[in-house]
Image 1 (cartoon, rainbow, N blue to C red):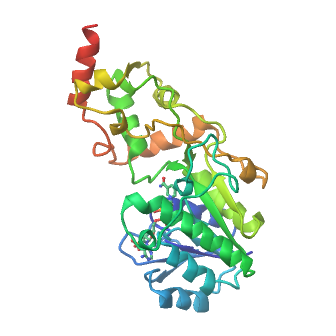
Image 2 (tube, rainbow, N blue to C red):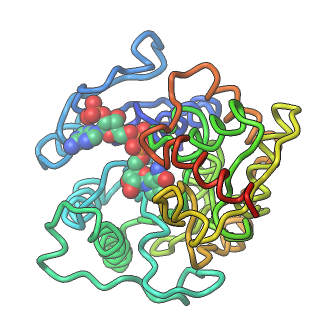
Length: 329
Ligand SMILES: NC(=O)c1ccc[n+]([C@@H]2O[C@H](COP(=O)([O-])OP(=O)(O)OC[C@H]3O[C@@H](n4cnc5c(N)ncnc54)[C@H](OP(=O)(O)O)[C@@H]3O)[C@@H](O)[C@H]2O)c1
């Protein structure tokens, strides 16, 4: 495979994917609407096709003019998007759909491809735009991939858990990095042992390439850090990167009440663990970046950016009230 079309490609996962593909000598074309700045505008190795992927004729035009070997679909939020793309790019050597760990419909540890049931999706959910139906729609996209593979299309799916790293516009990790950077005492919800599996963005990019090259049609592959850390350990990893000693202060539901905060208000906190098995992807020869390295790059990118995550979690004044209550015990 020599040429790749990335549907999307200028924001976060797709942006890292373009870099990964360039490093592996692909001719890369990105397809997007152009509402976002193109970080590859000055890179003559990356061509760009303008178009809205929800418009089939934009995909048809790209199929005709670019004729890519591999297609990576970063912007499929509705099952009809996947159905359209797997039809239009049916003759390509590989089509990879960026699905999500949110597609899983049962809480179990770990969630495994082909074993853990997926979310159902009603006709109404399939065309909805709200976050409540995100997992349903992603799951139905997976089923569209499986159906296309039945018809002979080399279609696969990659399911990332929570993705972090440079250019992460969700700012979930930025909130925590900002806390560790600015304060000596950091409130961690609960006892700090909860786990919401995370995936370093460069590892998601390499997973997408490897699945295109070596994945089996009709299969889905989870991607996430091979070694997981709890929320408390993640905060310690950040502190290690800053070479600073911080005091982690655990606060349960009652203590948090003092600040009018709930456990779920903290970014990357999840009551029940969300863990994806990554064995199937690792069997293709994929590896994840060591956590320290992934965190070092994430912290460096945070410091260079203007992201502080302030919209993503409790404000410091509320936390100070919680710390005040704990100090009186
Ligand atoms: N972040 C996570 O934690 C996470 C976890 C699991 C799965 N995912 C999945 O990852 C994917 C998103 O990745 P990303 O945003 O990081 O990808 P990206 O490819 O880096 O950025 C999104 C791109 O899509 C383009 N775009 C948006 N709407 C479009 C449209 N209608 N037609 C054509 N292009 C369009 C944007 O440019 P323009 O606006 O200029 O068009 C931009 O280039 C989604 O499928 C999401 O479900 C994310």
